[in-house]
Image (cartoon, rainbow, N blue to C red; front, side, top):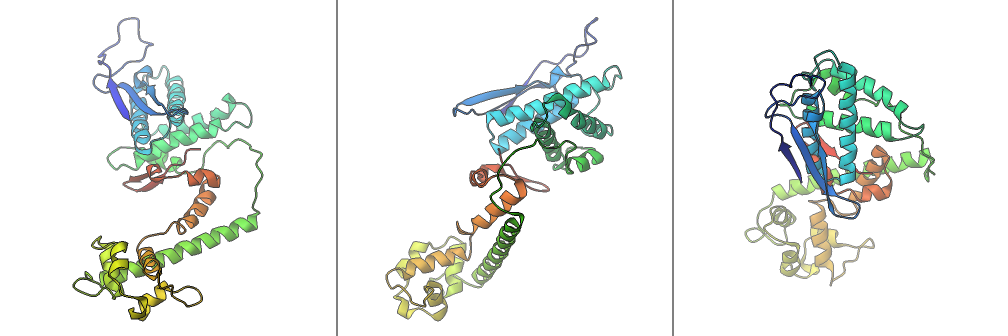
Length: 331
């Protein structure tokens, strides 16, 4: 759960307090999110944009952070990592712009933001031990929030900054000594096979839905008509159980239905034919569990995650955005 707690605004700093951050009335407030801890308990994570002189920038990043945590359901630890990225970047912006009087005006639509982000990324490695993955993790986290903002057409983002955020990081990932169980040739073979399986799946589903569009309800058509059965399943008018209970013995089926229930040796099991047919009809309309394995292989190849990490990937990690779909894998 994510929420925003607003402080009462301060219209002007008191005399002698010029070096303290200024909060704009009605805009800057503490952002708070909650997520599960390692022990499974709900843990609160807060961020205060008003603690920075670049408060407008901090508030924009904080708002993206709140929405991101809420939509992905990441853990409190992962949420804290994103907060650290915002905190470190905003501190760097305050230091870079100190004395210019522009700190309060800078935001993600400002032309100088590209330079500020680039300089911050390049300097991250110097603040961690050699080989640490934190510099790349923080840089990637900040870019995720920038890309998220750019994905929304009503949220202004500097064009050069958005282009940079979609490009390669300016800091390298830390070194890891891991044993690779597949050779480069093996990986290429697996990826090619996965893409072939995905293409086959798409063709199968397209053919199934095309047939379904040609059918009608089996009650007004026929329980022995393939398009009618697909039509009923596609529109939720019938269930697989209806098919197994309403169809006659396999010997009375037309050839197209018999072929769907055949074993590799060409025989049709009399007692299980209806269940086999129902499963294969559903598979013409929707992916099966085995079909999803190809996507797991492609996710492993695209993300560099282990197969175990990809297996934990679920619906809560999918976020639909105006310009596409974002998948979030928490490592």
